[in-house]
Length: 257
Image (cartoon, rainbow, N blue to C red):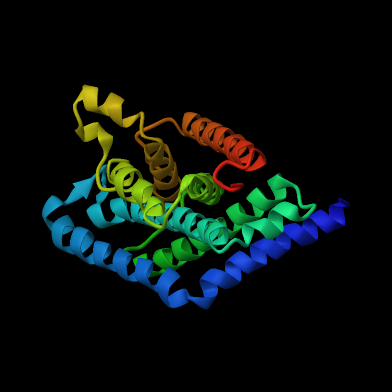
């Protein structure tokens, strides 16, 4: 295929994905906004007033970057896993398989669609957070780059989950039993410096820790981990998952019957 044809195929998938979650915005954009507002009220105002400071910052100010990143992670992931599995379930995937569109274009289109929803929800949550605290970005490049890379990483993860899923129940197993615990234990609500040395080491095995702390560094200028190492880890995760997802797609895993 020519480059122009590849771009047409790519943007067709992306536009379809964006129109999909915008069409049902009351299910895709509104609930995360309400959920994060409750987090701000309960953890920030009510519990935060008793905790005081965390890492030299007001507790509300400290947890806001983590809550924004949580919304980006969950929505990037859920958009792709639900969309691509629905394509399999409704047999629309066959239209893509018989087309001359390369697999990497299909994968990239779905991933960018998930990124779009993740960033949209993240932006909404950021605006809501301004009603509760004053955010001043310390490093704009780090802030934008890490939130984009995180959305890419979990969009790919959602794609892999959708490939393996055989029922609608299967697309909720990973978010419920893996993604949610890792997010809560990823330094969203606390600094790992409060943990004993052993548990600090265990926490460093959690990939979400690197994303949350890097995003917090971009906004507040503080982090529990080395930023350069965090970016390296995120890029390695993206590269590994992308090629694995592409391998599954090329071999028809969970797609061709």
